[in-house]
Length: 438
Image 1 (cartoon, one colour):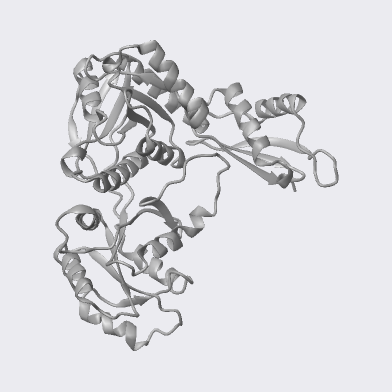
Image 2 (cartoon, rainbow, N blue to C red; image 1 turned 60 degrees about the vertical axis):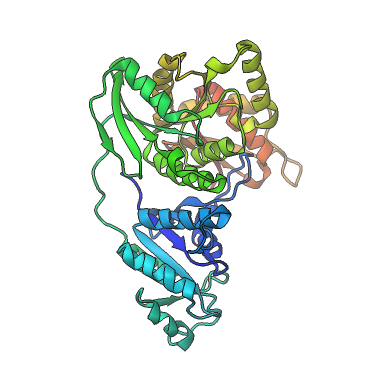
């Protein structure tokens, strides 16, 4: 069942991104030591009062734009409004209602969407401020005065937003291991899914998913049921590069959230490029196990040489991907497609795997004998008392130590590397936390 989507829209320079970052502030305070690539976020999972939801940031809306970047931004905002359960229409108190604000308000009303009018840059409290009251003329309901920069009014806004989110969880997911097939445009996602289904010829049914233009397809292999979540139809709407970035991010995020395992499709002739890395990082951040399928392998002439080159690039330029399994495949010739379901099943098992505390601590004792914990400020090694597993999907482990701050990022990566080697978490994100022993 997919999370509800909340879209932030507004004309340029009203503080949409500031509001986006402010709402995500609590979640982003949890930092992972894993090195990765930096990316500009458009879509993220946010949480308030125990309720998760998708939060989508859009560019400044210019309704008259017909081509180029401004037109791409306009279409992105329209798509976000179309898919949203709740729209946050952001306006600027300093300028008062503008013609652009009026246009966006009419668009929201026309779509009959639940909406909240967010009057930003209210840097002093005051519910009766006449500047905020002036926005009633937009016809989008009661203005909510906030300051995204200072955090004023954000809590009240989110509490009201939660009241508007749908409480009906929707249809349950069909049984089977859910596998999201994601990737940037033109890498062959749909071709790969069609080749898999055609090879098996065991499609039970296809039904519309909760994401626009996505399709859930069921098939079986070796007695295991799978549900493939394909983000189809992407190329028909991605006319501009910025469109492609936005659509890929939005649809991939929603497909990833629904999945237990993610199959990332990239182009073998091109190798990993920036947008591929963004998709993969989204998967890792979501805590989903992943396999990378290098599609269009039939176009490669010197296959062995090319595979060694792809592996070398990952080791040298993207070491944070080194633990992810990867396969060369071809949707055209069906080369190696038979190996994918086995990989998915293994990754699904990994994500659910539990390790006993006694087994974990035998491993911890052995790994400390190989490399002692770093020294504290007093020059003595930090004492690591014990480890325990605290969650699955993704697997989470907590280590209790006398001085957690002494276990720096490099040593934690060392522990994580050996944890993978010992227990086989090859393609699954593993969360490792260090706490002070009481």
